[in-house]
Structure formats: structure tokens, C-alpha cells
Image (tube, rainbow, N blue to C red; front, side, top):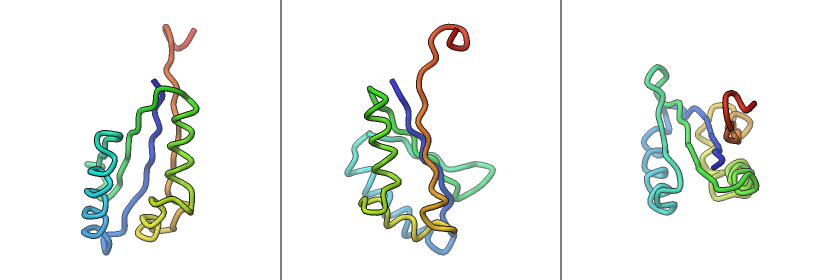
Length: 99
């Protein structure tokens, strides 16, 4: 199992629009990802996507960051735009610290 994390901050002026838009995305992608909001930093969001393979995790990352993606609309609500939408993929560690 691989994971793709997507992290960004939403400008307060767009909070309601973002929450409504994201509710639709969550419906459209039915359980494909979990969405979290920072407790110490309101309007800081992290999406957690699970993928069976590294290739699929990298595909999620590409889709989330591509300027032609249906997700790109969201970058208008992020201070600093798409450059401030960060995505990382993680692989599992086998054994103690992968050794």
C-alpha cells in the first residue's frame, strides 16, 4: 500500500466555496481519499489517498497537481496558487526502519 498526501491552505475568503466544492469531490470520488483540516492551523488541509502500487500513487499525485486537471480550480483559492499545493508519495517500510 502506498500513500499520496496533498497539502494546501485555503484563503478564508474562499472557505465556503472550497467546502462546498470539496463535498462534491468527496461524493464523486467515494471513499478514495480522506480529508483532514489542521487543528492548530484552520484552513490547512491534507488529503490522504491510498494506492495499491507506487505507480498508482504517482498517478494520483500527477492528477492532483496537473494544471489541466479538474482539481486545478482549487488552486485559485490557495494563497500563492498551484505552487503552494504540495503532494508527496510515501512507501511502506518493511521491518524495523526498513532494514
